[in-house]
Image (cartoon, rainbow, N blue to C red; front, side, top):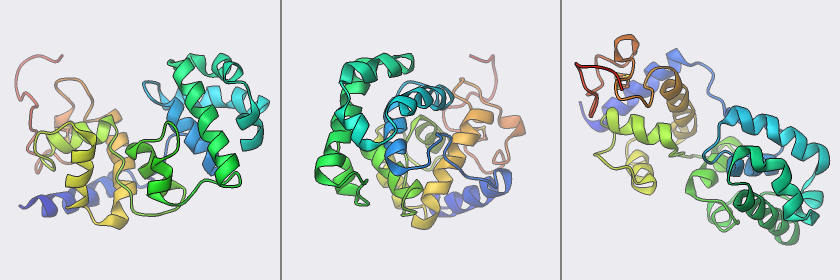
Length: 218
Ligand code: SF4
């Protein structure tokens, strides 16, 4: 089976397993997803979803958040960790949205990449989830699973993983596929040394690269 054939089979099986492919960060406006994805670094989505409620209660729109003192933002977002740098980036990002984009989030990958605190992973997430465009979101689950499944060849570099997946994943499938990798990574192909291969819908086609087939769990 070629990598492309393997990828297509995995896509189909994960669709059956996880019919709903959704972002687990709550948002109802594009700028809020930008805020949440910055807060989600080294933090759980569940915690981010709680913390942003306090943030938006005080700063309900781009203008108010852009005008806020970063120290006030930090005070609210510090339960997510890295409060100082996250508050600084969110403040700077909202000011760019206000000053250069009329308060709107640009639907252009390169423009998104230039926003403070926004890297390729976040820009892809916005392109896919907000604008419905092709996207490959290389978060920790995507990188771990792509390696174990043999879709990429032993690289942990997010950009290299992204480029390798672009070459084998149909563009229109990318965004949902990555959401399903997150779900599968949390439920079955977990970060522990020995994931739950015995109950995995991919076990007969997955090469399980780097996964010990015998021995004790980590
Ligand atoms: S078979 Fe094992 S290594 Fe492969 S995707 Fe499933 S849980 Fe992960």
